[in-house]
Image 1: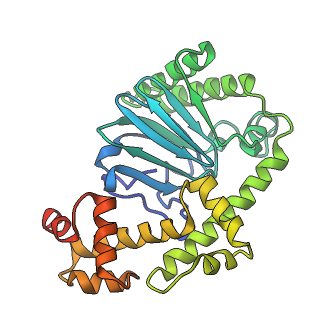
Image 2: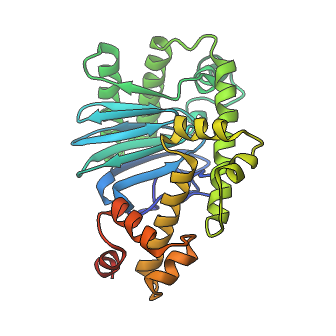
Length: 298
């Protein structure tokens, strides 16, 4: 969920799939220690990946929007994010989040009995995420093992071996304590819905400069307007039109910081027909006027 080795923005393709490689083919594991506050707009924006992810909140409080849920997590807690689940992290202060992203195949080869019996069922379940609380005994053990994983990354001796051992222990704890039976059908439905969401967002990203209506967005996946509204509300907690406006505003912010175009021309180039409306919306989202934003960024 990273922007290479530097803070900034998440790198994704048109479906919001993250394009950064976490580890290597030989060792598909990566450890990060980041501050949400230092990312663009103080958030790690919407993205998803085939790898699973464990996050620990070292300090502060942050909002984690994962799949169809919204969770406020505080220092000492953690979260597991399942494979291919779209997510976004927001903060209103400095929030340090050491985290690991790894392919489940690191635990066992995909064609193995262990993978089929203990790993695939969890990946295929409808569990989008799991909140880890120190107040629940087995979850506290997982959090402590997670901290041990972080500590191992600072050492060279047997780092990969010890990491794999701890990850297997963590996975075993989750598998033994979470009820994942009879959840595959709803999981498949969720995957289909998320695919529809990604297609609609892709349409917005490609055509945001043009006049777009809710009907246009819904038609990209042959849905009714109300169904499109429901999907955006469930997964992004925002309407399709509001998502479009916010995307236009973020594109305009980049142009304000990187070009010398007039505020009027930038508003028009990003799909706003009324510059007054653009300025009001911009200030509401960023807390400053477009002109003030440009001065700060330059």
